[in-house]
Image 1 (spheres, helix red, strand yellow):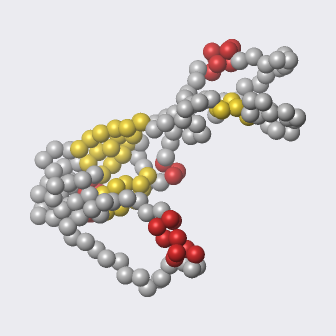
Image 2 (cartoon, helix red, strand yellow; image 1 turned 90 degrees about the vertical axis):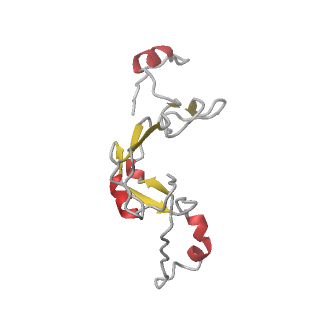
Amino acid sequence: MTFTQPMDRESVEQAFSTDPPTEGIFYWGQYSQAPTWIYYEDAWNRGGFDPGATITTFSKITSFSYRVSQKDSYTDTTYRVNLSTAARDTSGNHLRFPLEFSFSTVQSSSTLNGIQTMPYHGDVDVGLLLNNGIRITFPRNMDHESTEKALNMTPASDIIFIWP
């Protein structure tokens, strides 16, 4: 989120909410972006970070990003984000109206575009009893009944469907 004025961090973080509720981390800065290990590769390779490092605080920050914790990151979910009028700038002025928006996550955590199969098409010498059977992963939620009716196997075999 980017604002036209420097914001009071504490009030913004308290005014921020998601539905479903999430835990996460706020990253504040002009070009706020959640840090990843790649930014700290040299420190990581040296065996850690300097415990005496200084944290710098900036008072003119006008943007932040929010990184949702992995435990609250769900597939096939619509998240609603709200920033209430309790958020204020560093001069004490509250937002004139709440900011609300929503977004939906992908329907499958393992494939975005196509149907994945295991074993792969064309595999040879596959031991189905040793390889957890046959797995089919769809890019979106499927109707169980119609999907099961549409699948067949040659040679014919008893099929047991297990849905997540």
